[in-house]
Length: 173
Image 1 (cartoon, one colour):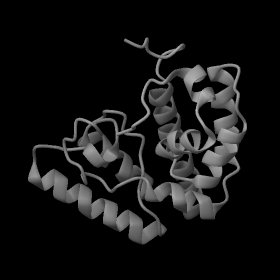
Image 2 (cartoon, helix red, strand yellow; image 1 turned 135 degrees about the vertical axis):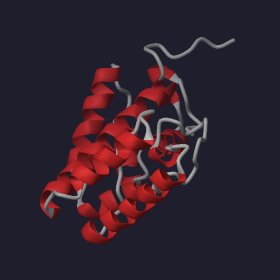
Image 3 (cartoon, helix red, strand yellow; image 1 turned 90 degrees about the vertical axis):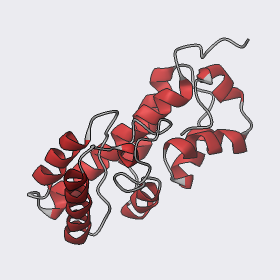
């Protein structure tokens, strides 16, 4: 769950540097990426911030991608969590056999590729996740690194969107 939700672009731009880095780190667990984006403020529009975030993400070296992966708990880690329902860690299927198969498939994936499986779940269910995981096991290592990075970028974008909320942010009450 993000602590900074729906703050709007103006409030994000006005945050002290440390708080801006913290808000961005919640979206992507990579301190250098978060610092570069925070230091790029003030952003004139959502589009400008999102474009910069995507460019910076695309240039992350593998060592920083490893940092990003640490911010993604394994499948079902927070099963049924309302706060994390858009994340793979909250994925749940009311079928113990399916959940066991998911855990085994994720472990096999990690063994095969050397990094944790990530998927932009965004509220999709465990059966869809299992189908994706199964299909991705057929990739070669280079293809899967590219797919993994694209999934991480999608997750980061959805988190940034939740952090900012609607254009203009939510009204203060």
